[in-house]
Length: 149
Image (cartoon, rainbow, N blue to C red; front, side):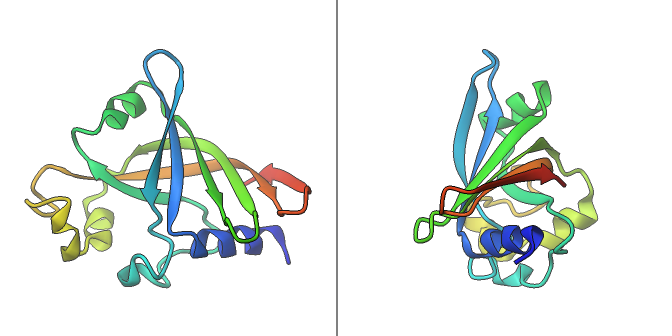
């Protein structure tokens, strides 16, 4: 299987993704984020993602500490792992707040009001876009492939 197909298959089956940003002391901070590419997690986004574009999107709140970290340093990494096969991928790149209202609106689902009670336009709903530049893919059998995206 071609590497991009393997990466996409992994991204589509994992429900949560680890996002690491850099805090003010230069130390990485990792948090578990909802994987919007997983069609079982976000059914309204099924078929939305282009297999050639590995941009990952996350939702968060405006007051999250990661927002200050991203404003100061946009370098980030994302890690996904399938605990059943031990296939894993590390993506290295940059993260930023999505400002495009049309794009944000297209991702919104009313079920998210449990996290953002004032809705998509209430000021708390933030969408992040992570653009990977490089990857390392671990096939679960002690083989590593790496390259640029």
